[in-house]
Structure formats: structure tokens, C-alpha cells
Figure: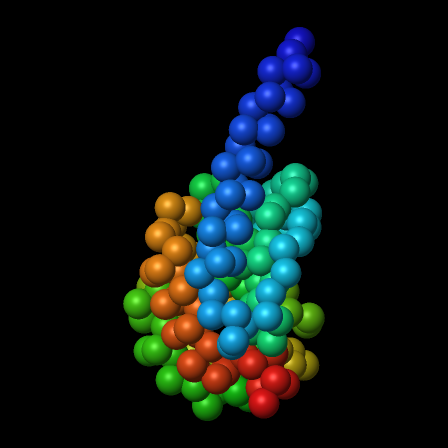
Length: 173
């Protein structure tokens, strides 16, 4: 039998620590450039087409950076999620992402992870194939260590912003 009082106490400690981390990361953002808000969402991990679907369902703390991305604070990692038009990605130099661990996934017609830097497929060919299947936008998830320092986090966000690839970034200009 689960001791509900102990479970509640443990969850409170975990979420209090995560909330503190979230606000620290938010403070690291240049408020003259980035408008953001804190939110809570329920998990919905993307998976590779060949993977078994996991039915995770618990609240995730999120920093929603207007015009750029969402920053999800998971128990074991931080995931930055953004989207771009498939045509933008076809014209983009993906080597600019080499410093990150990342996955690319389709958003509507092909909602699976299909590429990361460790795969030996031709990205342009895969994107053209997805475009022919009717996919219009591609999601990008960048994975960071859960213990990233706020200064380094700020640099990562600035780097993503300077890439000028994401939808939201283009709308602001």
C-alpha cells in the first residue's frame, strides 16, 4: 500500500526543486529579447517509429519563450522543443546543431522521431520524402543536462535564437 502522505511529501520536494530551477533559468534570459511565461503541461514524449509507445502522464514544468521555443523540465533532463517549416530546414545547415544532442520529428503527418546527428541517413532526402508525404513542419528537440547552469542555458537559448530558423523567431521580426 502506498503511503499517500509520504508520496505527497516526496512530490512536493521534487517539484519545489524543479520550480526553483525553472525560475533560475527564466531569470537568465535577457528580458529585452525574450518574453516568457511559466506553464505546466502533461507529458507527451515523441518516440521513434520502431519504439513501443510509452503512456507517461504527469505534469512537466515549462518555460514558454514567446516566438522561439518551449523549455520542458523533466525529472532527468531538460528538453527544448521548437518547430520550423520543413522548407526552412531543407535550406538550413544542420551542422549548426552538432554541439547538441537533438532529435527531429514530423509534427502532423509523420509524428515520429526520424533523425539525430548519430544517424547515417541523408537528412535532405528524408526531408524531401516527408514533404512528399504532406508533412509541413518539423519539430526539433534539444536535450540538455538537468543540472545545466543558468549562464550556459542562456547561451544555448541565444544560440538557438541566432539561428533564425524557428517559426516563432520569424514572426517577431
